[in-house]
Image (cartoon, rainbow, N blue to C red):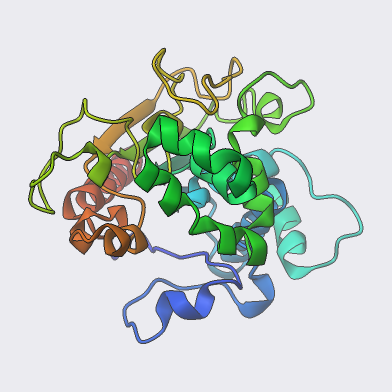
Length: 311
């Protein structure tokens, strides 16, 4: 980003090697003893990331952080803010949780969260992954056969690494009020956090037959999704009245979003480079490779840092 504002990356033990293998110039990663299951339930994963922030404070002295989370990372970033407001449970002596306590004691602050293509309100692809026999026909009818078949690629992920994430991201977890659910516990958590929600809505279902693979597609042709996550979920908005089932509707409790300071931006991107290969479209359609989306993130953060420096 900028030499004056160091950047760190926080992958867990499920993807650390793959994320930097053969690459140079990558941001600093956490030590092995501080890595975690990036696909675990958000409460535990958020507290582990808080431990990484505690480590950065103990090592470099930083106290204020801007979190950028891609996909499930955006959900976990919100959980990290929640973890900062609760002291880690006594008795857990693992390095990550020990550092999480240090972060709380040191008054570490999370100034902003930027999420890219994050399933904040779940999505039908995760229903397919959790129960393909039950949900594939329903999702195919409502969201398109190609979307439903593509969602099946998450099944292996669910069975090997992502049980916690998949179970949390099913639409049933967000489709009705539950006073004991995680949504209800998030009220007021982000009140002092600047939130930027970035969404993608480019999939072949939205294209006309014969369109070139890199064309901007008809935005009224099919449900708005990045191939995995609905746009309403990425932007934390109520499901439109015409929203296909499941879930048919999304419950959003009062107060999980800050009262002000929420920015929303949409780009014609799909969820990942894996999706670009599956759909046969250029990698620049993946949010992580899209020049416009990345430039927006960098510019937004740099502008915020410059304002903070002047304050």
